[in-house]
Length: 225
Image (cartoon, rainbow, N blue to C red; front, side, top):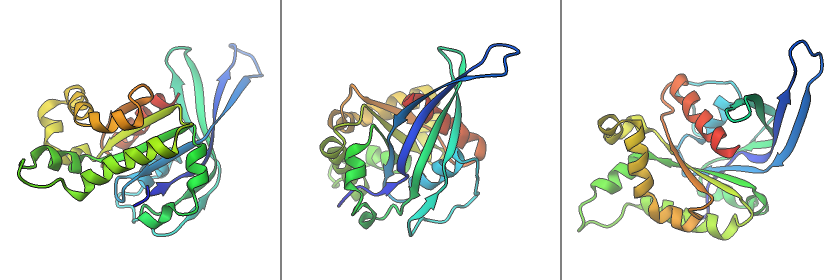
C-alpha cells in the first residue's frame, strides 16, 4: 500500500533582518519542498491547519483533495536571533487514504524534506503487544512506509518523524516529555534505520488543544530549519 499523502507543495524558507529604526528589511528565500505524510487520522490536517492559523476542535477526516492558498509559518531562529518564516506554496490537502498517493509520486521523489506522522497510540499498542501475538497492521504500515521513504525520498535532506496524540499514550504522563521522546525514539530505531538516522529526527507532542498543537508544530518547524 502506498504512503498516504497530505500537503503537496513547495515551501520557501524566509529570513527577515532589520536594524532598529530602519525602514527596510533584507529577506532570504530558500526553496524547500516539504511533504507531510502519514496514515489516516495521525493529525496531518490539524498540523496543516495550525500552520495556517486555523483551528478546529474536531476536524473532519479529509476525503478529497483541497487546494490551499499560500501561507507563512513564523518561527524564531534561536541561533541568529532573527525572525524566520516557512512559506508554503502550491499546497494541496490530500486524503490520508491509501489511494490518495497515486499520481503524486513525482512530488514525493522531489521532496527536500519529509514530515511523517505516527500515532502514539499505535506505538503504545506495539510496546504492550504480547510476544506471541503478531504485529498490528498499523505498526507494520509504519515500517513499510519507512521503506517507501527510503526508496522514493532519496533527495530529502531531512526527515522528521512526528509522534502525535501523545495525550492518548499513558507512557507520556508517566515518563514526562524528555524521557518519553527518548523512549519512542528508541522504539522507532527500526524506522530510523530505514529512513536514514543521519537525516532523521523525532519530535513528539499532542494535537488535542491549540496550545499543545502550537508546541508540536513549532518543534517540527525548528527541526526543518
